[in-house]
Length: 182
Image (cartoon, rainbow, N blue to C red; front, top):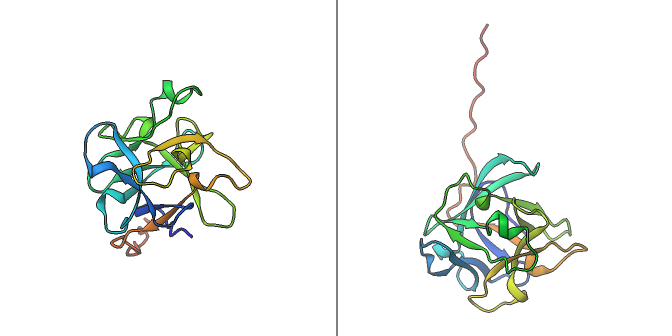
């Protein structure tokens, strides 16, 4: 099950195996850094903790988010728009220091609706694709790619549980309504 309560700090766990996390290779702030899976202590590893930031409703009609790696401050990034529309190329997901205004850094979180609490992480540039573990692999260092969303209920290696990090903010002070002018 997911802990998804909206924008916050999360570690992202594979539905395929609950000890496998989305991880930034070495936590480095270099361009085109590899985003991979890692079997291990994702809860305490800053390479595996992602800040999910709400951006509002975008051009897809869905809520859109940035995924920022805690250690490096890099954005989870899909391939460029000219590449993502092709079907004959490998669509490798990376992390980059790039402008937050580019659609490459925008993602939607879509419920799988299969009674598991899992989600697809979908790039805004092509909503028919989802974040996927390459080849359904489970070994450390297996890269993440974009692959066609399958339904009924779909491949587990494209489904993710969003688990709150240990230092996530669980509730915020209620803000009072602004007084009405009389």
